Length: 187
Image (cartoon, rainbow, N blue to C red; front, side, top):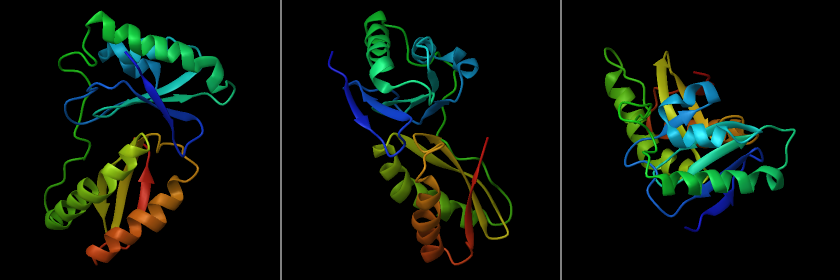
């Protein structure tokens, strides 16, 4: 098994490409070791000292490290954990484990606007940020303000504010006049 790695705009995050499907659908975010119980792979990766977060996409694993440690020191152990996991035959995420399509549910007034927002995020935004090892999902819409949740490489990335304001906010405001602002939200 040959696992490729790619840097991301977030220097604390590295994208691992195992050359196999990681998740058939959706994403899975494990922002701490305590949240990784439903994933044998995430648990294995968190066993590596210095790992602060794990995120799964369709064909990639994004790992976030602590600032005190260098990638050269933990990258081999993470590669080993991923290889070991694929050789074990265990599932990536246990049945019934944390896996989502990402977007928060929204019903009631503004549901047409919210559907447009989700469609634009799915077609224009999420594929682009997935290339950088992250995901951005809809969290809410209130009085013209769209609240988005940033995961994987996007969470804590120095350029995420610029991406939100200059990229996503401009895109949504262009297509949906009711949108006045985009803000990040911590979940």
